Length: 241
Ligand code: OAD
Image 1 (cartoon, helix red, strand yellow):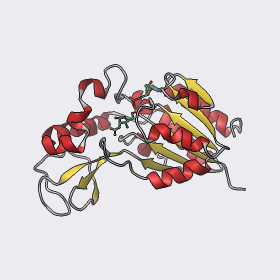
Image 2: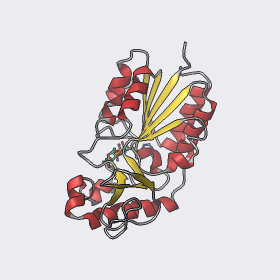
Image 3: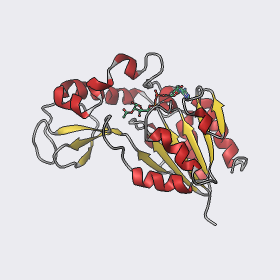
């Protein structure tokens, strides 16, 4: 018998109390910016400066943000759980990374990319990146200006790590969705994939019931900095699986 496997999907709600805006809440990022202007490959062709500016601002904001109690609780779970812990995040911030989730023994997959990475659109080579990017920034691999883009999955592009994510969903014992509205696929469909393996207990932890809340066995509602540490405590006490 293998050790119990936990798969956790996180969204913008897990970082909200660190001061980073969500997408669809009041005054969220998509209230003030049109997806078609800043988050599609077509937008980048039409107006690369506007797209760079949007992601430069968001990268700069990360300097002011710090992991909160929910990020830290998930890292604690990864270090103390006797099975495997996989965190699949839709977030492009680095707060799970800075909570030392990977060093704690968990696996972390940024399925929508990372603000702290850049990619050459000609070679697809990916680079660590923590400064502004403009249309004049030379690419580190080919030295050409205009080829670098944020390493972000835009609408119409394939999310990253899908093969590995589907593999762990098919064998997980517990699937937890935290701080996501369930509006964007394929992530919104992960609960169905986890349930197909018949043994997975599925839980939604969010500020309010998401559009897919009825697909979960259990729902816990409130601010992530309170609900996530409390739920992690119950898991580690052996109360859930
Ligand atoms: P959304 O903005 O759609 O949803 C955030 C969810 O977090 C909402 O359901 C809120 O109720 C909840 N929430 C807000 N504050 C919270 C708190 N303090 N504690 C717990 N929950 C809280 O963000 P996502 O679902 O992450 O994709 O959005 C998914 C994707 O849509 C993003 O990755 C992004 C976006 O377009 C791309 O850019 C490709």
